[in-house]
Image (cartoon, rainbow, N blue to C red):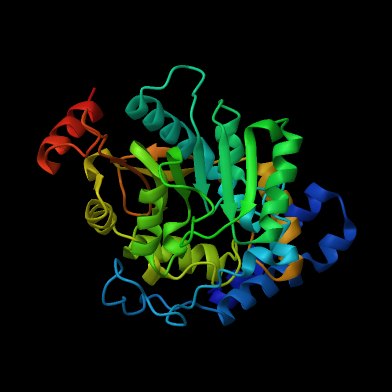
Length: 359
């Protein structure tokens, strides 16, 4: 037999794939240009082969990082194109990917708040999301009964959040306002029973300042819940190499791997600010896979003509034990003693905290 070289194999695979797409969408035009589109996508990916070695880490992630030291683009959320994707029906459309996290993180946040705050079914109290973005998590929690306030520096994101709350009939349970993680001066001390930082910590250059503000606005005994990304080689491959550079699921420079936060760093920072925290209570989350041939073909038909690879068939996230990539956590301020002061010792508070966390 005749030996088939790699280029010929690539051409044959591209031809078969393009014909499958064309058969699904029923377009002769796609069939005519499908081969070129598929090969163009492969070539485009080859030209932007990513760096597989992570950059040198910052000397300390739990100390302030100088402005301009990071490559992250936190202004992208005010971009009209990106800012309109928060609630897209396509969960692979840039910021809409955050919708997939809710199936894991919202039950976790709700469970922690109900257990640690001893909430009745009506979930009374006041709750704040710092860096709410388009309100994906804020509105989901409001739908469970929480009275939510969301702050964000991006005006476009706040517009999307308000529209989302109105569409869900939850405008009476949500308030959205311009605000900054480093300055929560719009709120008095001891304002909230719970604070949420969802997909926020890995965007902040001055974590100590942000955590100190969260501590100030939380009531004694209040609970901070959060999700963030671990700084590991797995997270570099998943969040930077694949999601950002190869598959282009998210906008460029939406993350800087050096800003990702290891669980023990989060625990140390929170404990230094008076929180009780136990990393044994942290949980990971990971996406599931949905292998629907029709959706796969539709995705390919949309992606290939623009020189992109089809997005992976990712579906809703679930809780997992591994903290290697995305993880969930919580921390609690010690309640006041009967005399109106903080409890007697951090050690005794931690013992009570651990007992409550295991019940």
